[in-house]
Amino acid sequence: MGMDIVLTVAMVEVVCVALGVIGLILTIVICALPTWSVTTIIAGNVATTEVVWYGLWMYCVTQGTGQTQCEVYNSVCLWCGSLLWDSWKYGLQPARAMILTAIILGVLGVMVSMVGAKCTNWIKDKTSQAKMIIIAGILFILAGILILIPVSLVAIPIINDSSTRIEEKPELGNSLYLGWVAASLLLIGGVTLCIKEGVFGWIMGIFGWIVSLVLCVISVWFPYNHYPEPQYRNI
View 1 (cartoon, rainbow, N blue to C red):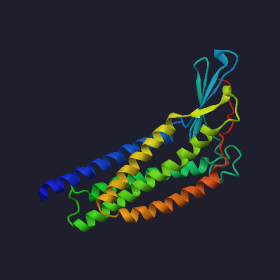
View 2 (cartoon, rainbow, N blue to C red):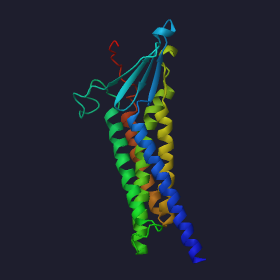
View 3 (cartoon, helix red, strand yellow):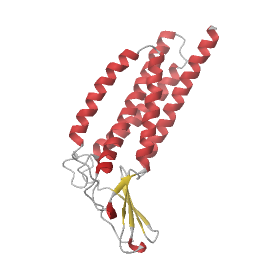
View 4 (cartoon, helix red, strand yellow):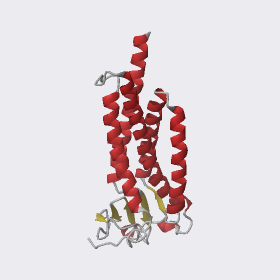
């Protein structure tokens, strides 16, 4: 019976770590790809129709002829505050910071969980193993929250936008959907690891603090809800 319990606990840890790894990979993908938002600019004919893809680091324009051109955002003032950077005043810098931080936390969470996992047996002391698993769970939870905030705050204005014409209305990009999946996997994996070690009450307290932080971020960021107007070069 005791061996069965140990195997079950080890399997739960393996599944949670696997969820964290998948979430981490998806986070790296959404960080790299310019597919956070897509705007189709419909002109008089197919040849002049353009599709503009926006990401954290660049935007890409696909013309009706099939040609695609990608441009990195103006980096002259890369580390200036979002309100001071004229080429993107709507939360690009916080989004970059949160996604990159989420990737770092995800990597640390995977490493810590592997060290503390019962199946690896790198740490013999059970108390130390439990502490490492709790730390890994918290890292996964924080990574999931840091992904959820920018993804949701980019999506909300796009969904609620009624000020633009149908011919130029922005739509949700694939990265937003992948971001929600990544955040969900990390949160599920992290919460499960923590609950497994009996710290559910502690996690609920942290969750309340995180909710307060999210509400503060929303109140600051929500007014800034558009993407920058791209400047094209003739190809």
